[in-house]
Length: 114
Length: 113
Image (cartoon, rainbow over all chains, first blue to last red; front, top):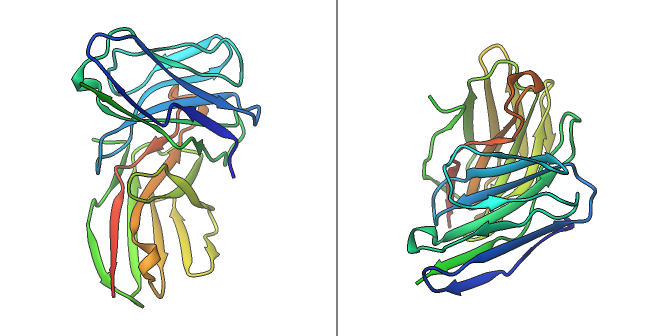
């Protein structure tokens, strides 16, 4: 089993609230990723990080922000949640820069903004 | 054009059938390739890596064709439990400036009794 954890698993929150989705991994991986996925749809990369203090935006424009102050921790923050943010958010990590490095996923956070 | 393209399906096959999925990628410098499986409302999990020489794991066989830039997954003797979405994943070259794994949109497989 992969040692990557996301909390909370489920979150229902009101519009305008600030939320932080947590992601931690104990594998010492340099690369970490956040993906957004609607039910039955494809994964969209929204943020990734190569290492501490290194973050970049992904393919899908997102109003969220991330930080990478410690190797094992990659939280995602929404300053003001909106119903359009309702989705599943998946965190993943992989080694870098080795080849053939698979990504391990957390179980996801299912966010509903009402 | 998407970096990784897959036929979305769904592929509806009877138990025991053999089914093949293809995936094409646009970056010829891509370094490594994987097939992931994603069950409904679950996170993706690695099914198998794809090596240049091709590789087999039980009923599953993965092939890579670098010249044509496609990857395939063959499932023999399909089981009901194989029903899932299969994601093609490409690890780009460090030279491309894009250093995140790229996922295809997935091919949905439904194995019927």
